[in-house]
Structures are given as structure tokens and as C-alpha cells.
Image (tube, rainbow, N blue to C red; front, side):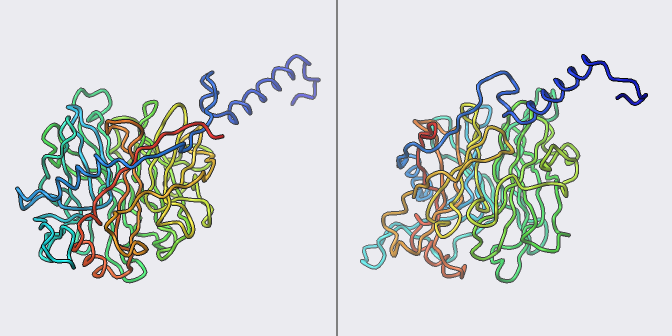
Length: 414
């Protein structure tokens, strides 16, 4: 019956039902299906090889003693290709200064840096179009926002200064953290920011705060965005995560936001995935991946768009969390994510001993780095809860605090 009490015409009921079914199918199908294309079939790691050339280039540059104010080691490795084909490499905690060759002593077989080496919270190194590292920008590139606070650069994108503008700039996502007592030995998250660098000179023009999390009482629930970013269909998709449990967390949760191209530095342009769509309120954000136990992400992870698939790499959850890299795949940026797929253990420095005290972490993809396969970097550090102990080891062996690389070949799941 209709609202007027009259029988509804049979043909109208058919139309309503047809439209309803079409809407349900449209919502349920993967994004590729909505465009009339074949759905994605997934991508997993079919094989991998150590990328000794890329690893060696960072070792060469770090060991070069021609300058005493340049990069000699760091972690938090991210990269972005610039319009003139240079690559800007961004690092979080970094060492500058001179590296000394191994002395003729049996107890010190590694290149090393002394305890007076400058330490900064972030740095940037420029690679030539030919693939040679050639310049360290004045460091720190992003100044501390306040005492006991610092900025770690994460993902970066080249985009128009504003929508439709012919001028391009580099937008660098920043994590702001603040010193805190244990168990937060690496500080507590406070905010997501976006820095603007001019082109081609890479001068810092300004920093905009996108999302303040300092008022969230539980630091483990604060979400920082920018661990990885993918530009697709006019939007920059920005992934983030929380810290989960500060000590020995099994798995953190991943979150997703997006901004239209050219508007990454505008807080009001950001939208947050709320489980059903895109919300203007960051408090509505819902996790796109993570169960808090065996399924989830590390505090840093990376995503790439390939052959219609979204593929995510992270340190494996659980006891393998600082040994193995796992992956997930999805047909849409927000999931659902299938996985984790089979893990692989990236090689650690051959001269690191004892090896059980060395950790791999922070996998990051670098699609713009030339060569065969998909380039993935990972950082290496001494596994010790006491920062001073770890610092002593990485100064005695500088290879312990530099990015290392592998090349991945992805294929459809079996």
C-alpha cells in the first residue's frame, strides 16, 4: 500500500526493488568493479633479493669524510621524487659529522663515529637523477616546535601549491612528539603537521598543524597520520596509526585520511574514514586494519598501489615483530585487507654480532627508485630499551643505523 492507502502500481515496486539491489551491489563491490573493470586479484611477495647497490650507496655517502656536517646515519627512511628527477630522502633521528675508518685493532673492525657526533631529530639528503647521494640539507630541516618536543618527517608528496596552480611544492608530513617517561622512551605523539618546501631549492616555507592529539588523555590512543601516502584519482590518501601499547605492543591499528590534490596543507580539506564514508571530524575515524593481537601494523608501515591492488607492508605482529616483514592486500584504500600473507626476514648487517640484539623495523616502499622490482627499505638498530646502550653500539658500528634495501617481486596469491 502507498502512503495514501492506494495500492502501489506493480511496475513501480519492480523499479524500487531494482534500484535498491543496484545500490547494494554498488556499495558491496570493490572500487574496480564500480568502474566496469575487472576486480583486483591481490598481490603478495613472490620473491625478494637484497639490493646491495642501494644499501652500498648510503654506506658510501655516510662514510665520505669530505664534509664534516653531512649525514652519516639515520632511521625513518622516506623518499619522494622531485620534478627534476632528483630524489629527496627524509630521515627522522640522524647523525651528522665524520665517520672514522676501522682502526688496525681486532676489537674494532667497523667504521665508527665518536661520541661528539652531532645528533639531530630530522635530516634530508638529496640524490641526483643518476642515483648518487650528493647533498645534505641544513639540519635539522624542521625545527623543534617547543622544548622537549621534536618533529619526525614521514611521507612526502609533490603537489600544486593550490588546486589548478602551475607552481609545485613539496608537502612533507610531520609527526610531532614530546619527551615522556617510560614506557614511552621515544616520546608520546602530539600532532600531525604538514611542512611546505619550495622548489627547486627545497627551502622550508612554513608548517601547518593538521591534527592536534595532545588533549587525548591516553597516549596509546593518539593517532598520527603520514606513515605513508598514495596519490590516486585526485586525492592523496594518508595512512596513520596509533602507538598501541608502548612496550612490546603486539599490533597497532591503521587509520586512513585523504585530501584533494593541492590541499594537503589545509586542515579543513582533510577527511577521515569513519567505517562507512569520509567524515570532516577526526574523532569519527575508525581503524581500517588491526585487531590488537595478531593482525595489524607496526607504528610505521607503507602502502603502494599496483595493478589495481593496494598492498601494505609492515613488521609482522607478535613475536616476529622486529624480525619479519608481513604484507596485506586490498581492492580499496580502506580495505577490507586480506592477510597477513607469508612473512620474509630481510638480511641484517653481516658484521653485526650478536645478531639476536639487532632489529629490523620501519619498512618503506620507494616506487621512484630505479632498478628491477619494487624497492623497499628497512631500518636497522641495536635492540635495547636503554637509548644510551643502543647509541653506544651504533656509534661503534655505523652500519647499524643506516637504511638497507631489498627488491620485491609481487604476484597474485596462489
